[in-house]
Length: 319
Image (cartoon, one colour):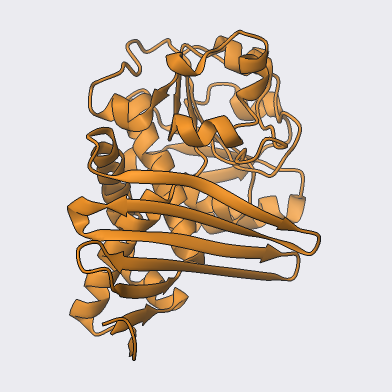
């Protein structure tokens, strides 16, 4: 039987602290060759785009894929989990929220690994729904004192500040210039769909950590070349994924200023195979694009918890 789990049920089960734990395990297992990820493939059509991501996780006895179809007026997200040993499908999970929370969790894992331990001021570029979970991921691993939110849509900026202030019990307030957002911030979150850099890299200050998570296509670009050149440490969720999706790093690669071989995967840093931050004055950058293994590890927990709590319904196929 296939357990079918709806969006609202995933929200009941999966918290950000648990998602951070699961996503970190996924990165560590991949670095140890215990989990395997296939980069996103896209079928592009004039009216909408289909995206498919795949992963195998023998350690948790799952192989699976997430497929989602985006149109201006519709969004469809499903995670398919298959028993790695037996080959039968075990779960079909509505995965819009799951995707958002695991993306925020990846930012949390990277922040815990790369940001200064005393970091407590965050600058947010972007105030949409993914920016909310990105900030929540940071708040899970650092005790925050202040959050500045910069966004061009004033109504959404206002809603973001009100929602996140209440959710995190921290001061989240709007700012109206890039310089105001960055000055004195310790962590810089970037989560937009922009095709133009959002701030001048010359405004960055020593010790800052940047989480850039919106540029998951080569026609998107959230940070400029000056930012890339100023970063002492650059880490990606996956070099393989970044090569096909990281519009932020491509200009530096094309100009010979940066080489893929010198960029670490987050799992390599977590496992100690590559170096992350070594001083409080270094500027560090994490480029996040999204990986199916994050969905699969989160999905394993959601499926097990749903079965234990009697959540979801069994569909009459899959055995």
